[in-house]
Amino acid sequence: MKIQTKAYGEIELDERQRIEFPHGLLGFEKFKSYALLDAPQKPFLYLQSLDLAELAFVLIDPFLFRSDYTLDIADRDLAEIGLASPENAIVLSIVTVPADGSTVTANLMGPLVLNKANRLGVQAVLGDPRWQVKHDIMAELAKAGA
Image (cartoon, rainbow, N blue to C red; front, side, top):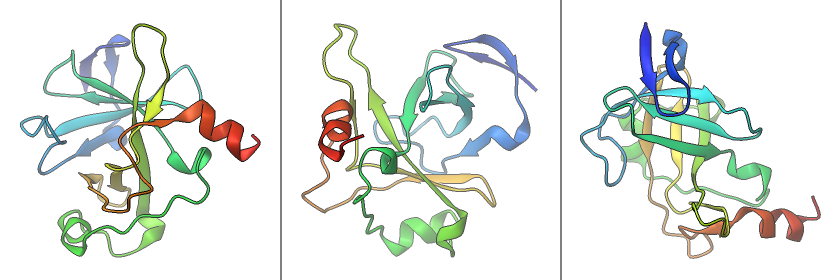
């Protein structure tokens, strides 16, 4: 299947890259179909909307810069995507890359949880006060000694 992307123009999509968010993402509820794509800048990924080529998110594995990251996700969120086992979960955070070159941050309060068995996803909202919407990725890496 060919898709239009914000970063790469038209590309061929492998169905295994397709992710469905039954309720969309916060603020983007009407967009439910996405593709998970590798970004040329490792360790980042792209989450490309299949409904709107101009809509894409940069993602990162939050455990790369916060080894102490913990998630207390509502059972209803896990049930919604059929996630019964942590081994089938992929957790990613949305990254903000400001155009003005200021601090690149990751949203640890609203992680994306993907079920790799059925390719369904949900954006959870965590109540733990340690996890904020804007975590400075480089500062977190420096603090961790990476």
